[in-house]
Image 1 (spheres, rainbow, N blue to C red):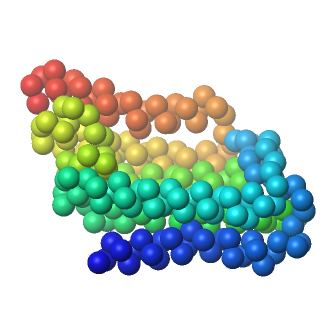
Image 2 (image 1 turned 60 degrees about the vertical axis):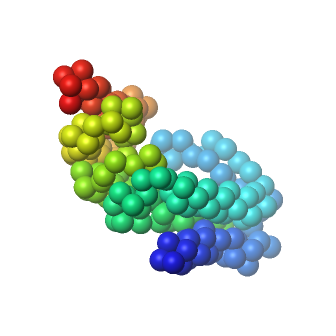
Amino acid sequence: MKNKKRLILTSLVCLLPLLVGAALYSRLPETVPMHWNLQGEVDGWGSRAQAVFLMPGFLLGMNLVLAWVLDADPKRANMSPALRAVAQWSVPLLSLLLSGVTLSAALGHPLPVERVVPVFVGLLFILIGNYLPKSKQSYTMGIRLPWTLASEENWNRTHRLAGYLWILGGLAFVVMSFIGWTLPVFFAILIVITLVPVVYSYLLYRKGI
């Protein structure tokens, strides 16, 4: 019941930008910015209908699919309630953020996208990293590899390391959003927080853990 109530609430939050966009529809230009590069420069455009209706609708669909996947997990009882809440609220918050950035830019009041979005992602990484070491084996949340799912000790050690790396990666995202991004740094952070735990867990597996 709690998860159903949360699904209804998160779905309504996903659609909130649609209501705001519909109210502002006549004030929006026919073409609005829809995508920005790492330096905060607009490099993609779309129609105002896409910005107002398609984006929130797509994120609503993501929210529903995510809820279905989490509920279908045979090991859903193992999920950390806090980590599950973070996962379920990330999409609606993303809907508010992306629609807010898009509508503001369309109305002539652009936000510093190169800072706002990375800070949001960085804080999300820090939050996830804080709860990763506390997560238990699951088919949908965490580093799901054959050897982590087969060994509880491997899972725990891998997620302990991943937690530290995700927190550091999140802090790096926040710092880089203020000093400036480069593609090598961006991909280096993503590689470290994703591949290092995988390699570490495999090495544990080779040791029989």
